[in-house]
Length: 188
Image (tube, rainbow, N blue to C red; front, side, top):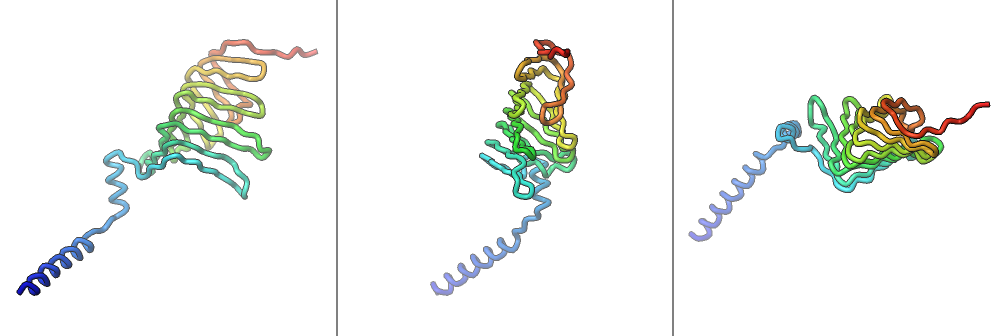
């Protein structure tokens, strides 16, 4: 009798476990929709060091302490860098541009990244530095722009103002509301 009772309990337990196993299914789209509805990222990564390369040549490096992937958003998918980011971009000659800030958010559909809080962009070869508190980086047009206060430092000049536009390597500027000392070369 005891053996029969143990067999019945074991059979019931096995049937219950099989039923639970077969009833579990994860529809990936349902999980993504749930995460989007709850305003949760689809992915979280810590201490990222990502190297981009083209034909075995390093073109850029991205490092960030925390990356939140919200690519599950239907209208405006984005990637957030809530603890800051640092991007080093290399050209064909090996010269580099460094972009760093305390916060960033990159929208994949528009390819525009907003960088905020202690933004610093450095062209190492030209020795040019741009400091501001907010900057937009259009990766399609390879352009930086801000409507906030900025300070641009070159070998000879320090220029401050409100409103700045430039190409990605900080060699072609358009500045508004400027002030500062500018070195002018005398032509003969």
